[in-house]
Amino acid sequence: MSSRLGAHALGDNRGTEFRVWAPLARAVELELPGRGLRIPMLSNDGVFECEVREVGAGTDYWYLLDGYRARPDPRSRYQPGGVHGPSRVLDPKQFLWSDAGFRCPDLGELAIYELHIGTFSAEGTFDAAIAHLPHLVDLGVNAVEIMPIAQFPGTRNWGYDGVFPFAPQASYGGPEGFARLVDACHAHGLAVVLDVVYNHAGPEGNYLGDFGPYFTERYKTDWGRAINFDGPDSDPVRRFFLDNALYWLSDFHVDALRLDAVHAIYDLSARHLLEELRDEVEAQAQRLGRRAYLIAESDLNDARVIRPVELGGFGIHSQWSDDFHHALRSLLAPDDRRGYLGDFGGVAHLGRALTQGFVYSGQYSSYRRRRHGNSSLDRPGQQFVVYQQNHDQVGNTAQGLRASTAIGLDGCKLGAVVLACAPNVPLLFMGEEFFATTPFAYFAGHSDPELNEAVRRGRAAEHAVFQRTESDRFDPIAESTFQKSKLDWTCLQQEPHAQVLQLYRDLFKLRSLHPSLGNCDQTRTRASWNEEERWLMLERGAENGEVALCLFNFSTLARKVPPANVHGRFRLALATSDQRYGGIGAAAQSPFADLDGRNADPIELGPSSALIYISV
Image 1 (cartoon, rainbow, N blue to C red):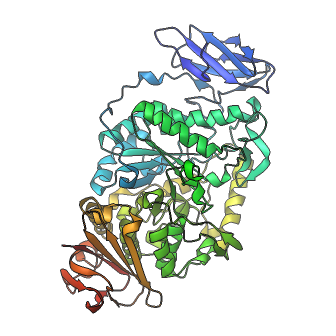
Image 2: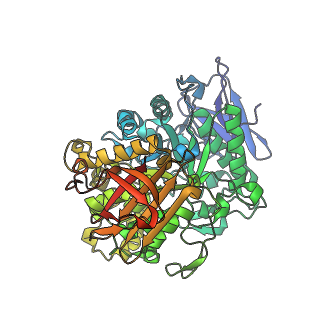
Image 3: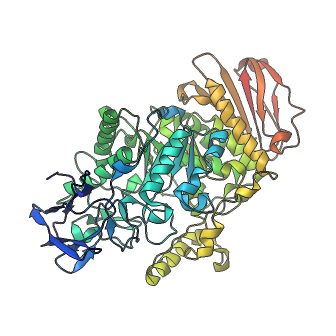
């Protein structure tokens, strides 16, 4: 008998082996509802197992705990009837992959596009998403980040309420649909980043606690009980999540995992789960002959998350950079000082994010009312994923307002150029590239009315900081909220959507053509700014000697920027005021700039605009 947990079809009509860790049960039976069979399982140190020759892929099954509790398999690979239905045996070897020639780009070469399967297309399925992949290729990104797909209750959810980490959401198309999407992404040259949740489990259909001590009362998370990563009997719990990460890499050819809210992974073990996860993922990638990355979401501003293990860190390859978002957003929308944005607002904050990573690296945070963070100055630029907006920054507002609505056209174009010029890994949120105005609100659809009401109350309390009336908020449980959050693809040929799309295409093309823009080398990045006049100049260098000069004006007035200490002849590569991007025209801008340090003439910048010059 194999040591593997879960249901594994043996192939060649040899049946299926079933193994489940259930130390809290006295007895476990395998129930096959379609056949009316109950088969006792043998116990071995809390693991129950049996092998059934007549059972193969496609068979539904339960585990019957102590003779009366029918539960799905914690390691179920497919839940066709939802979180409360039986599990189904799956044979991943039956899918025929065609991606043998695909190779994931280097970490510093990634340009990521975040999407939510349910709202990315009208149909809201894995297969429907495939039709839009050529759009992403034309845009110039090379990686797709997919919000969580682990089986959640109902058919509409952000995905962070998942309760079966090994089972791709059935209403999206299940495991075969997800495999087809990954295979298609690779055929289009797109890497796949999958968002996984290892800090909590959703409230409905969460049967893990019936099997074993998966949860602990020692810690609390914002979403309920914490996962038991360091208490008694925690070794099998850790193995559950470690195996899950390897499962996505191996069985579904995923290239990277985005780890949700690692600050809520509580582990005081001598070897933190993140370090162990990094080691196992890298070892698995080496066995598979592929690259594989881990990208953390962290609220800690702790460089230990991304610092190499040999330097005392956890060795995670990269992390989301909220500081970059906050610094940029507070400049583009200076009147919005809600919550954490109150700690930002200066041009210097953005300059620090662009050159050092963390803005708060030990300084006092008025929002947190304490010192926050440590220095990330020694970390390379590719260890920070930067964004103008993401699902959290859009969806966690009362009405799911995108930057297009909250900031406006000129601000979004300016922010797009800052994003493209940053010495980091850029991330776009779906629709951002064509100035989508459809909201992306929080939505869920539980079957329990009391749970739905609790979600309503929780979201209302969270949005109280916005000082909106009840009528201003979307009902997170209403089907209409989900439908309103779907992207509108029909606007791509209309103004200003087509012009903004052209801007993003040109920006990513510039990144691919010019190493001074496409690298993540913060050591060759120099920033200067004027806080009073609200402009920032970014000088980007490359090994071949090429230099990019990026100028940003966050003021509503025209500014003249003195290019001090910049030498050489530069060609104007992009101006947000260009008519092709919906501007009033860039006729006043000289196509060339001859700069000789402190004696150079100032470069004129229009209100809320950006320029990119490339050395010639």
